[in-house]
Length: 278
Picture 1 (cartoon, rainbow, N blue to C red):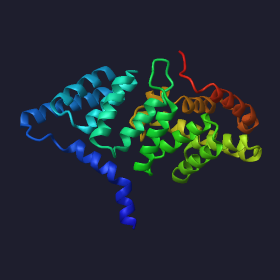
Picture 2 (cartoon, rainbow, N blue to C red):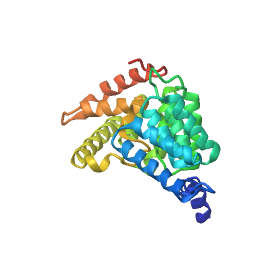
Picture 3 (tube, one colour):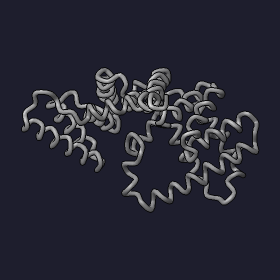
Picture 4 (cartoon, helix red, strand yellow):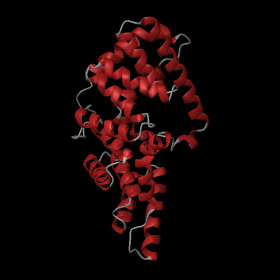
């Protein structure tokens, strides 16, 4: 049973890894070398924040091997960071057609549909929820989908669902300061002031520690464990709001601000169903 569960959880990731490494059939050696040259140039450009060049090189790679999962995935990431939303969707949809069990493609489609940006005509909470659920079903070890599902549930006013997904995140990652913040907010909404204070202080302390670590080793954290670079935070307006709140509070007794902070957070969520105008 344990073996079967492990295979079920990792099947999507395993097939994606094979798709990344397997060359296209009937390619000669020069074509393979040219493909990897474009792919490596694209990866370097993306790591340096040159997303236009990265997208160009990934497209050149895909002209040689149009079924390379890694190139499709990363091209979508570059397009999203360039705010080219339709093009990003096209890459990830093709990846799901090639491999319906691609958890990372469904996760990024959820990110796209959850992206509340004035230019993003694809913003849609229902589509985001559907994509995040598929990603969660395919990879139960990734906490990104349930964290986003918790945020969507809050926007929809479903407190029970929001708490269920928040608890799933914290069951796997007890240091997720965003999930802890949301847990405190949910406790505040339920009237549990002592519990909400404790969770807010815990989230604040973890965030401060995380920031100190990031400042010390910034070069080593750019790639991180997130599916994309930190620039994609503009797509997660709730996560961005949480981080802004936690960053703005510097006093030694943050619990004195709990009620005010959660009231402001509540007001920001109430206006969060439409794309943000910038």
